[in-house]
Length: 147
Image (tube, rainbow, N blue to C red):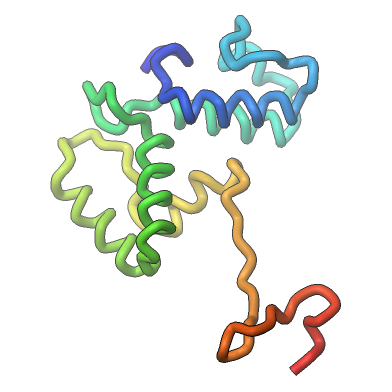
C-alpha cells in the first residue's frame, strides 16, 4: 500500500479525524505530504504518533495483501473481540493461530498487548465500571463512594 488511496476507507476517515485534531487547518489525509517523511523532522510527539498510525495504515498485513493493512486488520479483530466478548486470552490464542496460518512476512501483532499498543493512539480506550450485583446502579462519579 503506497498511498492513502489504497487504505481502507474507514481507516482513512479515522486518520483524517486524527489529523484534523492535531492541526485544524489540515483538511484531508489526501493533502500533499500527509504522510511524507519530510514532514516528520521537527514534529511534536503527538504528530509523530499520527505518522506512526499512518505508517501502520499503509503497511500491508503480509506481502501482496491488498485487502488489509496492519492497522485495519487489528481494528477488525478488536471489533470482533468487542462484539463477541472475547477474553484477552482468547484474543492471544487467535493471534497465535493466525501467525501460523498467514504467509511469512506478515506484520500481525504478536499478542493482545501489542495489538492494543498499536491502536492506543487511535483513542480506543475503556473504563471499567463497578456495578451492584443486580446491575441496578453504576457506582461512578458522584456515586463512586457508595457501597
